[in-house]
Image 1 (cartoon, rainbow, N blue to C red):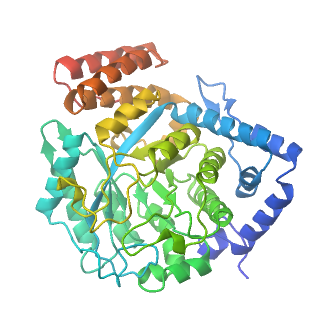
Image 2 (spheres, rainbow, N blue to C red):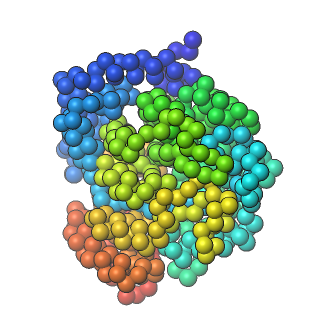
Image 3 (cartoon, rainbow, N blue to C red):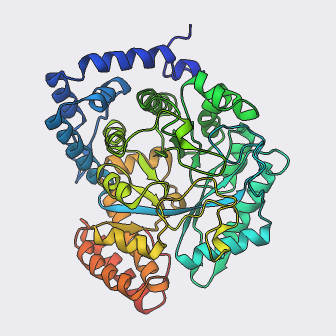
Length: 484
């Protein structure tokens, strides 16, 4: 029997089955313990550091966070949501980072039961973008206003080798169209070798993202019956290889609905604890997708689906447990669900996403090669306007990656409260670029009213003055790409 050890480099020891079951049992036994719940809420609450405006959050262990997740006391649940909102504002404020996925190829050799790209699906149209098609997709995304992409590709050593991925990254960075450019490419591709991760790091990627899908080994092997993804340990240990290969920022995620949510929640937090214990820095992001309908895939075949209310609480409890980690939500979810989760934890969302290969150059949204149904089908301008109407600042900022504020350097700034003097002005300046180059008249008017109001919230007077000067240059002198 494997022994739980967060510092181990073996998947079955840092994601330990017996520890997860014991943690769930312990949390079930204590979910009505008001005294314990109060102690946990106090432990997780932001506390001043005494340095400038910095606050410190201790976070919670996977066992402690499970108690909050399973709590059924209405007034305590209200406190949980309130605390999640407080932590979100302390570190990420009202800024919401915008991105879009770019699907390069849906050729795949795996047999994943929940994904329409699986090898045996003969219904889906298979496609791989040429470099000219990549350019066309990038121009279409730039014309919307996007500055940050997450590239996606199926696992196929012959059709999608690492050389193809690297060539696509070079192509994406090379495209300059009008005032548009993609300033950061995040990568979501299959688990690979340290050597290949080193190549991705050298290519200047942002975050390497890999969804675990499920942390339950037996379920994992059942859901991935064929192909290289069947190897649970190789997949689960990928983030350690990525960091060994020089990638500072990695992003975790599970596909909620495949396995019991309590198990996945514990496994996800244990993975974050492992990264912190071994590398000194936890995940840069955590994604929270749910199983959705797609070609050849019926989500009803998975009997572990979770309600919207439970899903929102999951987000809140993850935010409390790992306060410094960015949280991502895609257009899989409806506008209503996205609005509720933005309040309690989500700090990044996609906008105007198309989950098919070559989808952005098509006038009508293609469905024959989609990876999943998109619930939120609004344009980027509509999403930006919607966010601002709710008081959020849509941010197209990529400054931290380009200024070397990654990994532990990013976390250090976040924990000392200095991100407000970087992220806030950068968000406002990149929003100003969007308003000038891509926004509708209505969105532009709303945006500049928001910018004028939010400039006053930048703590440092000198930073505030420079940001205002740069925004004026963007509006009236053609200035672009200012950053702190």
